[in-house]
Length: 177
Image (cartoon, rainbow, N blue to C red; front, side):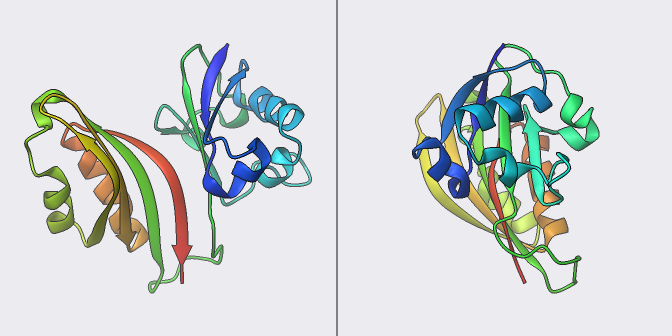
């Protein structure tokens, strides 16, 4: 089954710069093996020596973290969108002074285009919002948004975006001490 896989910037050197690839696979474990066959070196960056997902690599299927599904056994179906999100820096245990930066791709339904959702998220949560790219018209809109702040606040802000009715797809995460 063909699924779209979003490749984060640090791994794009393995995909000849491609930010998205299509892979035929039945589950996440098979997807990782197929990525390795197609783009050698990918598996060692996603999995440890025992074949388990690395601690600081998150994989989402249609915005759902596979850790809360069936892990590498999570089934895939035609048209699924898979996002691989590695930690780019950091990796130590959580500290109160940690800051995370999360880039997300948000898509607005037509009825939400004129609402100041990004502004409200910045006011409601202790996060800095930074628009990286955008394309908004009267009827459609998407924004690549960077959220920076305490990891808990960033996660709350993402939940807040979803609650306000926008679709949220993770792009990449960077943890800064």
